[in-house]
Amino acid sequence: MKWRSLEESSPDTDTRPLREILAERKELIAKYVPAETQAIHAQAVAELKHRNLAANILPVGAKAPAFELPDHDGKLVSSRDLLAHGRLVLCFIRGRWCPFCVGQMEAMNLIVQQIDQAGATLVAISPQTVKQSFFMQDQHKLRFLLLSDPGNKVAQQFGLTYRVPALQEAVYRRAFVNLPFTNGDDSWELPIPATFIADRDGTILYASANEDYTERPEPNEIVSALRKSR
Image 1: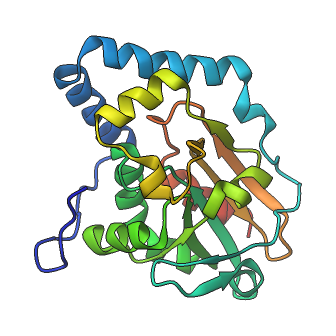
Image 2: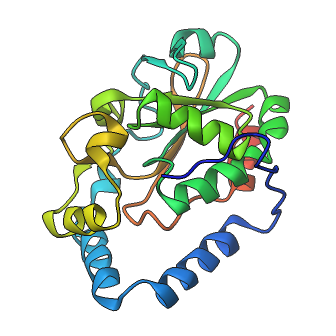
């Protein structure tokens, strides 16, 4: 996986709606990725939707589980300390290898100040290792914490995890998406992308998840939810 240093990278200033950015990435995939590979990914998403995985996530009104995870610099960060400063926006992502996760994180990066002004802190959680989180934060100049969730233990408590199907695993291996290396374990387990807002007492105020990793909530939807719940 190639990553760029700060000197090689420039801040992302793409202010289009996230749906347009993700649609553009889907168009590129449709143009350059073999049809049989696209079909395998579509089948994997369809299977997850058939299982209705998103319906089983922690709902609004539930209490978010407490956690302590290392950030992209290896420093342990606890949810208790984060909530002591205000509400918490949690984005669960797959990793830096996923172009849709990258698009979402770059879009969320542009609204960090609005989230701060609404009295909240933005944090992204993925199963990737601390080193991979560091590379992602460095390359994309992200201005918020990236937390590593070894073994998807926190994601499991939010009801988000699944095992990558065998056919999709084979595709990832051919495309050099080496999840055992990226995540530091052999589980081939990922979270479905999800975003939560937790109140200072841990009560979930907003919950959005989608089995289709190409779809993410608009950043302005998160800001609006924060303002409405003040």
